[in-house]
Image (cartoon, rainbow, N blue to C red):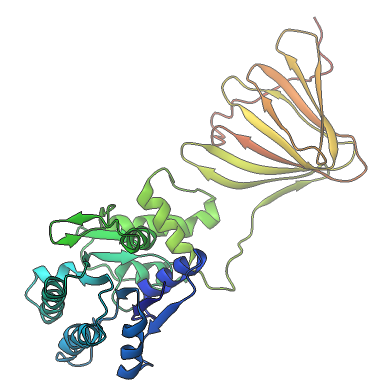
Amino acid sequence: MNILITGSNGFIAKNLIAELESHGYNNLLLFNRENDLDDLSEFCEKADFVFHLAGVNRPTHEEEFMEGNYNLTLELLNKLEEHGNKSPLLITSSIQVEKDNPYGRSKKAGEELVFNYGQKQNVNTYIYRLPNVFGKWCKPNYNSAVATFCHNIANELPIQVNDPDVMMKLVYIDDVIQEFIRALNGNPNDNNSFCEIPTIHFIKLGQIVELLESFRNSRQNYMIPNMSDEFTKKLYSTYLSYLDENDFNYPLKMNVDNRGSFTEILKTPDRGQVSVNVSKPGIIKGNHWHHTKNEKFLVVSGKGVIRFRKYNTSEVIEYHVSGNKLEVIDIPVGYTHNIENLGDTDMVTLMWANELFDPENPDTYYLEVQTWKN
């Protein structure tokens, strides 16, 4: 297919182009400010589908709204009609059409052009009145509060929140693109005369800021928020895309002694925490048991043995472990246990615990595995 995309340098278009190319669509006709109307005419002759994403939302002069949102749409439709091209047409509008402002009026005028064109030419037209769109590659300090706050908080810059209680209506860029792909395949999410993005998020601006600040603080406290919440997961992915390229890394607090080290990697409010344990050759760590806390051990480098003994019994159970054969060892409650490095290099073990460490209630009781007496 020859797919025409106007506004090809924009936020939504960049994500659409990346998705199309990943699906093998190579004949993309990209139209942006660097092109002229002759290019548009050529593209309109070839196109099998049109994504009209170009528009103006932050002009220098008010009259530019109509020039960018109405006049360009009119030129596009005229070129398609001149070439007798009845390709399906998808156009992005805005929920601002419901407000009496210059931008909303210009988008409404563009919608009406497309409605009339579709009826006159018997062409499938898909009009999406998008709310605020957030996601990677959105330009900060432009027309997206989410992009601005992500950029500023990720880069330790100040933010200004005029009204934390304002309710935001948001759609995520991946959800937008997936819906556009469905429209490309002739299966849009129709709702009367318009099409809609199926998943819409409603959240207060102040809550967004709180989440973003928690993402920033996670580099110090290692706390990852609840990713089972769809909006939180999408916002976290968006936030990470605004990190400075020289700031992808952050240090961990290593607890080092003559036995090796123990380092927490991440913590969650509901799924426990993950740590990495390094044991030097010949070192035994552990010799304790838990009432409720349970763990999983995974040796990823080196070799050793994990020993268990059930409380008030004498039998010692051994599991030999190695980075050459990755397997998880469950650490059940009520069993005192230890781990010994049997190799001549450091042994590295990835450890998960089902709860965060609480120094006031550690649920950890010292008991030797191999020196039990009746």
